[in-house]
Length: 407
Ligand SMILES: [Fe+2]
Ligand SMILES: [Fe+2]
Image (cartoon, rainbow, N blue to C red; front, side):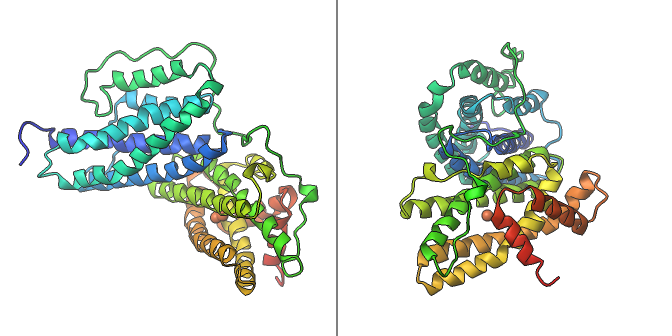
C-alpha cells in the first residue's frame, strides 16, 4: 500500500486537465508548424508526434470523463492558456523545438513519470495506467528532440530568450501540475514577433530542387514499368505536402469538435507515412530524398483557399479520385512480382478509405461550423473545378477526368 499524503481527486482532475490541454496545444502548434520547418527529418518526426499528442490527449480526456469532467477546457488557468497561445509565436525551428519539446513535452514526460507517485496509486489505478501508456511516446520524442536540437541550434541564434520566456510562463503558473509556487508572469522578450502561422508557403531546405510541372510526364505503366514506378514513388514522397496542408487546416479549425481534431491528426500522420513510402522506395531505387523535386506548389496554391475548402477539396475530391489508380497500381505491381511496391500501395489504399470516410463525416460539420451555405456536393464540384484550373500536378487532373468519365 502507498503511504503518505497524496493529491486529492479534485487536484488530480485539475492536473489531468492541464496535461490534456498541453498535449492538445503541442498537437496544434506542431501541426501549424509542419509546413514552416524546412528540416526534412523534423517534418517526418513531427508528423508522428502530432498524432501521438492527439492520442495522449484523448487518453486523458477518457480518464477525465470517468472522473466526471466533461468540459476539460473549462476553468483552466489564464497563464496556461496564454502559454498555449504563445507557443505559436516561435520564429523558427529552434524556437519551436526549444519550447514545444524542451519545455512543454519535457515537463509532460516528467509528469507522466511522477504521476503514479503523486496520486493515490491503489485507488486511482486507471489514471496510473494512462500515465504509463503516455510515457513511452513522450520518452522517445524527447530522446529524438534533444539529439536533433543539437544539430540545428547553431543555425538559429537567439532562441534562448524565447525558451526562457515560455519556461517562465509555465513556472509562474506553478509548473506542469500547477501545484508549485505561483509567481508574476515573465515579460515577453522585446522586439517584433510576427505570428507566422498559418504558413502561406511550405518551407524546404534551400538546396533542394523544386518540381517543374512542365517536365512531369507520366511514363506508361506497361511499356516502361521501371520509369513508371520511380515516377510514382517520387509523387508519393511529395505527399508530405498533403500532411502540411492538413497541418494548416488543423491549426485553422480549432472550433471543431475534438473527434475531428483527433481524426485530422491521424490523417496528417498517414500522409507523412505515404511520403515515407516514397522515401523508402526512391532510396531503394537509388535516389536521395534531396534528388526528388519538391511539389511545394500544391501546398502553396491550396493555401489561397480557406481551410474548409481545402479540406473538402482534399477529402471529397482529390482522395476519392485517386482510388482507382491505386487499385490499378497494386494489380500491376503484383503482376510483375514487385512485392514491395504492391505492399506499399495496398497500405496506402487502406488508409485512404478512412480519409474519404472522415471527409464525408466532417465536411458537412465544417460547412455548418463556418457558416457555408453550400451542400457537400456543391463545394466538391466548386473546388474540383478550381483544382482543374490551379493544380500544378497533371496526375490530379487526369484522375479527376477519369473519375468523371461516362457521366
Ligand atoms: Fe496519401
Ligand atoms: Fe489520404
